[in-house]
Image (cartoon, rainbow, N blue to C red; front, side):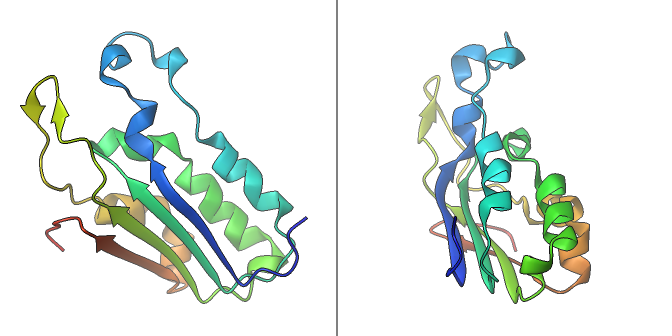
Length: 138
């Protein structure tokens, strides 16, 4: 389907949307799914040089909305990804400012969590994490 791409950006993924406050403690089965992100990758026939994920999170568990381990393994197994020069995760500061009238922390350091989940990509030297508008500790 996509055969002339060099850069693919999954933009502004609000991973906290998978865990709305009203169901956080009640029904994990009713969580929103970001499985489409992983399902999209097999349809990329281009030899990408850059893959970017722009994500917004409020808690560590928000990273679970995407199977980073599956993406890591898939990028390693497919020949169309042999030309990758970088896999970037950009943490966005688009988090909600309030949850139940409690202010949300200004930023969460999830770089190490993400690096552990994408070990193959890290070992290849492709992994890059950055922040846009997010106040981080790294």
